Length: 183
Image (cartoon, rainbow, N blue to C red; front, top):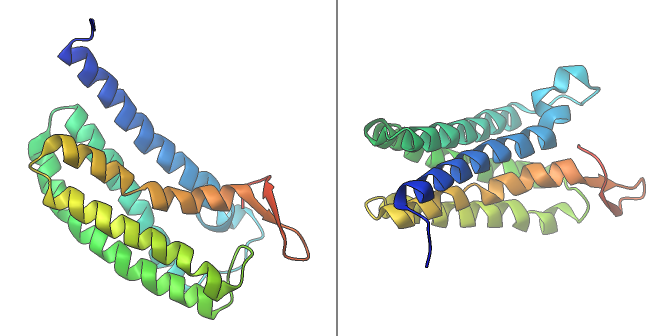
């Protein structure tokens, strides 16, 4: 028999979702600190306006995710639903800007290792998964147990980009060296 009570389960879930949101933000920050968030402190090359807009929109998504989790944890689902409307618009904007940024990067020859057109499948695949999971989460928002499990998975692919940026180093000859350093 389980000694777990519904209130203790909710407390664990609250901590889990808040930890996941904060952890995701930290992963993305670590991954893009040198080239975006703390760019002024490092000798990083200039970034295109489109990449900057992409960075702002993606950062907003992670902040909105944390706010949404905190609202649910504090039982402010009335505000959570209102913020969710803006989050839906932001999600659509992320897909549009994400596709444009990925194609722009491939055209400019940007890739962490494989040929840019081959690597293009990674961000486009992440955006497809994001779109499906977030669209399902939004359309199933009245089924709370499903909604609360789908929405966090919508950030998985986004976190992958930060994780990849934080963990991949490329040798001078272009071969991938593995988990070594941020940016």
